[in-house]
Length: 154
Image (cartoon, helix red, strand yellow):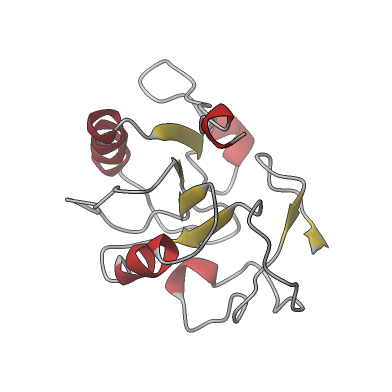
């Protein structure tokens, strides 16, 4: 596992391939991590940065993880009609850095609405940009920091 500056977790682990430049969403992020033995209590998530990689959600559903989540960050396109069956949490955010790609409010709102309809926790991390703190994390005047319901698994 690797320590991280990601605000919604303390550490990350990429059990298969880690992030590579093959995935548009991971252009500037993680390196390949080592292997850990799978246990039933590990939360598992996949990055779904655009509408071309939603097949990852089906693969996530096949895992034995008790909590399954989507990291739609950086969100690069709209992602209509997400099948959220078996998904507990969706994290959405814009890209930050020196040359961030844009995120549109309507994309974020659509995912929030999809989460509401499917009773899935929604977390809006940030708008991103070259000054992510200035751009903030308020979505229509509200902060969305929902977490999945873990008591159902205890």
